Image (cartoon, rainbow, N blue to C red; front, side, top):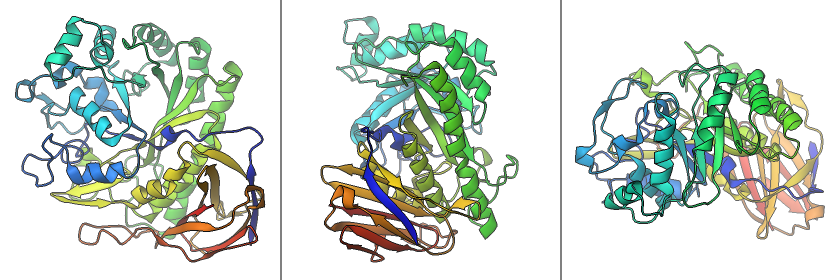
Length: 487
């Protein structure tokens, strides 16, 4: 039996809600037929959003949403997406599959979506094909209450008051399709661009610089050396879990062996090493941790579902993805001192999606259910878990995080092994008295929800845990995620 002791940290450490952030891009069916309803859909709200998707996302209390990309941001010109919908220019999305882009979903629709979800907005500015003036104008259009020409234009387009813009990304993957820049060249451009990103409401706005592609530590070194913390409040990193490690043949989303499952989770947990090494570099230049590490793209990436458009990145979502999500969120929590935001890619119908749609049908994926079970960690005080975790199959036997708020303590445990594990937690330092509720998400690692059977993988009451004299013991099924709320 694995044994642990749960206790308060010596210094208070709050898990940022923004670690549960999300990412929506004009890619495949994430926006259109995902967040925004098809014109003929019975699920269409009066404003045009997809009602069932919005309702499902509201339940997660999403803290932040990134838009319009991703790679699409580097070909996006914000003026295309304002004004009368029927008069907006129609473009071709040359980034993802060359479909027509109607610009029906633009700035006003995005900020309205954030209002409906109760989340913060994170805009990605176009550095790839845009200009610094274009970015500056967008920030003014969004945030200005002054009686300027752009403010009047926003009001004419239906929005009287400015919107809040807490986060602005300046450039996306500029080391690749966003510009093929060297870190020194980008650092100099960033210093210039950030100077003109001025919120007209005079409220704090985190300026996030484009950071490394996975383990490119040289990029982080050069950015930290050349850009002062007063100019850069966040530095991003992108990492996707590709089971095979080969981009041309990533692996199937549903049909995989037990060993391929284990290898996927091993690759997902590379996130621990990435964050540690990037943080070590940042600590040398920024010991006060003024610059946040922002994991604004993460998740699984498999071969697309057969019969779907290759460039639309539509894939199924199994218990493997639930384990991947749970373990990765735990990694973020352990790096809370530096990681202040993380955005799963992507919200609907793309990569490791929370939600899949088909016509007017919708399902919540196993990943959705992990975010639901874990949402109590948002803005909670991180607790210390003392105890040794052995390695089995080159993976931790279990992954565990605990946090507390005034209403009690949330303990989330992930068993990435395919075999049963038992664990005991000494909670005496927290003076817990009872189990408020306990939920279990489990199944074969290939189990997934379909539109005909949308509840194959969903949380159920967990009766495998017992609390006696402030000692919590439990038996964890193989390939499972458990959330226990204690008071």
